[in-house]
Length: 481
Image (cartoon, rainbow, N blue to C red):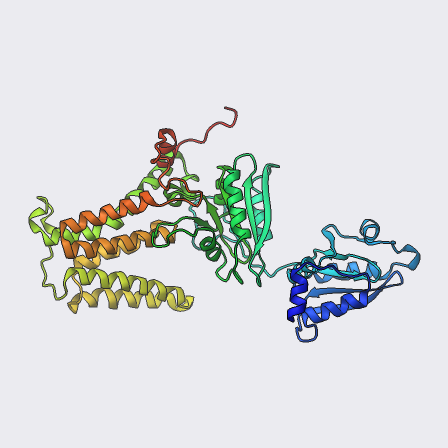
């Protein structure tokens, strides 16, 4: 696209009634002939010359054949005098629109919409017969549940909105389409209940999307999240909740939250989000209240243990006299060739290295390589003297316990805070240990949601009834009450 053409498109200039001019403009703009996947065809419709444009691979072939067969079969005396009558009388398809603005026409074409131009008509006909390559709607690998629905979001935003509509059959459910990115023009859908959502916050989100000045959302939802939340980045605790489960997204919509879907991304972004929202999981609600409460409290307790276990062990090894009676067995009896702090830090790094290796390992090799890693890096690293067995045990618990949280962001936030506590304890002893805990509490308490509300609600500000509901899995309220 040359500079003059690009300027014309951005200024929103309109097409003309002469088909020859419009075809030349499309040829210059789209580099037809150079781009093999941009197709066009000139046909006769009711004695008028017409041309349609499409992106190869985005249109349904069978549907296209039927539409072309009908349009080519129109006789001259049956032809409508203008584009409005044409849509009413001779367009055998449901999703049809029209436009005379070049910017809108080209945006629709690049999105996969069929564009039909007829000589003498002042507007182009936009036929939404597109179909995107998509995988099956199957259970996501990350957000699995023991009981409940086994479907998950995919990379096609229309399929994702349909999965939510299937669960919320209410006229109150709104789904607004927006886009961002100068080049990518990525589709973004805001899903919310009109009577339950905070409309001031909703307008803030819309303004944030409109004011995004980037060439493309190269990282999909992460790019969008960083554009919407522009405060300090060094607080690691998550500001958004991500889920690949339609039932989880639907539940948050019903609670008054806003769910943001981004095209080409198989997960939903939920906002505003507190720390209690991040810890919540679908399994809590697919089991009876007693079981759901146990699962939730177990995750709370395990999350606390993943932070405190290794720094507390390091502190006790620095001060053996503080070890309670009956717990003398936790002392390290073997010789230490490396200081404890270096053992913990090396294992923290090694665990992330193994995780990255597992992601990039082909499935056929994952099992034998996992066994090899467990034998070599586990047993032989202890026998060789690099690590003590107690250190390996506690770090193995921390590594496994991290996977009890569905949120990667929360797991890494606790990991960063744990490393800070280990270093502070090694350098300053008990005062470093206390100071690191204070830093953790301040980081959580000072964190704010995207809506600029408390990250610890309903604990701060205190709301007793809501806090009980967030900690304990209670029975669902009667809809008639």
